[in-house]
Length: 397
Image 1: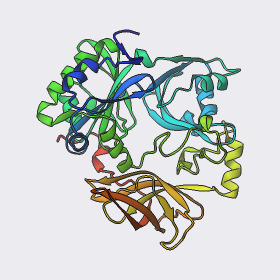
Image 2: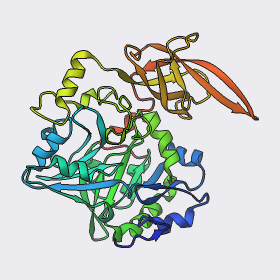
Image 3: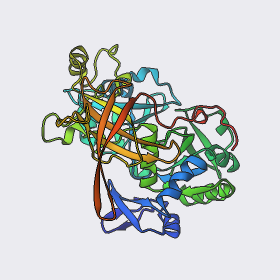
Image 4: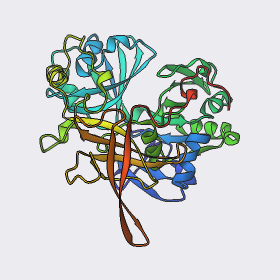
């Protein structure tokens, strides 16, 4: 531990002193041993900073594993379902890893820092699984979560702010690229990644650089509408982007108690991450059999009529049916899309793009509960997908 503080058994991020100065809500939750803010000002204001200017989210609690050694590539290629041989140094890969039954343990990002040097980032802790999977391989796995802090800098003005900070060469960084830059005489790493579905970056640095980086970032961002954001605003944006979250849209396979409660990558709409051309990876045989027979469940993106979010709602094939075919896992009214949207899981053969389903929505107004059977259409694209997130260089804003 370096400068992190501990309060009531929770670690504080190196950015906490600056966060405490702006906090107006005092709403915090525990994220893998750290205190993480639900919000600082107001969820709506913070959400619109992501879509209209720049929102800054503290990523420090994210688990970070450094994976090195002669067998690092072979190890990762066996661990995850996608072909890591295609991810060159200076690139970032989204990946999932499964148990032997082909059920997803977690998803995350893998940073190819240099030849034979990787960083795996995930929401959950996985040292025991990673270590067990490394048996027989010459590989080193080090938990560097406390040695690396990070900020997600997300929104249409994020590029302009980093450029105004004096980060030279940031305009060359492509989506899912990473590069090292000079900051006040020291090195920082910036990746063009994020969890908002918008133009955005993630800044990775040593804890002793944290406060200087925060100050420089917010000073440069004054005229661009920069704002610190919490988990609630981030959650809205990730649903609009169609991104899934562990313990929300799927349950990690290594914590399930009842059979049938976990999901495969094919059932989560992540078949594009499963490369059967690889000779071997964890869960390959089970996934090949599932692909041959067909999946039980299907993740769906739903455009739902009305404006009442369908939190924890059942999904039906027709409005008069008494037997549900699935359920909603994430839901929100999207202010920028002007849509009532949701992610859900439904039983096959339901869930094909264009299918019409019905969602049972309950909502309360002035202590009175109402029920609506809302029509929903299965869509295949993210609800929010602006061209600026792919543009290189991004245009000034």
